[in-house]
Amino acid sequence: MAFEDLCRRFDLFLTRLKSVGDTQRGMIILDKTTRETSLQKLSREFRKVGTQWGSLKNIADTPFFVDSRASRLVQIADHVAYSVFRRYNSGDAQYLDIIAHRFDAVDSVIHGLLHKHTERHACTCPACLSRRLTTGRGEPTNR
Image (cartoon, rainbow, N blue to C red; front, side):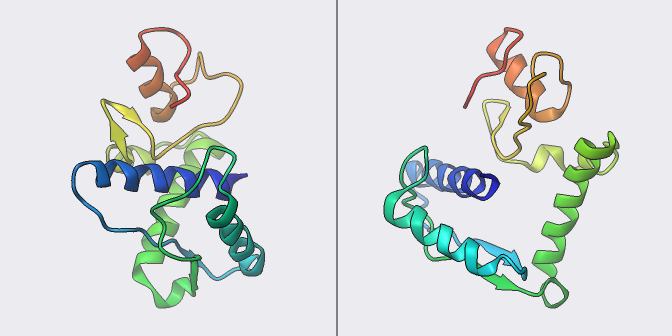
């Protein structure tokens, strides 16, 4: 479910870029994992039949897997993931606060970060708050 959501959000980001003339396609690069085969299979399925939200049109290939020790970009992604994990698992926002403004956003709604839970109306994390403040109501949008 998380990988499907990630692929769809990345495709939406690339679709928005394409709408303003940037026609590059995207690649997903992941840290080496024992789930490599299953994620590649899922990715092929998403390209053939789409996700639960529709087809993926802007992702160039199946994901590439690299050892994070050999790639500084994957190490940076690990740091971003860690900052998100610390915020949502331990309530420690010190790292996420530094980078939160860098997540994909349109009209002040953060699309590159999503908090899936049942208490969205009271949550003050950047993802939930951006949706709630933009709608002007207590409940965030599903964008």
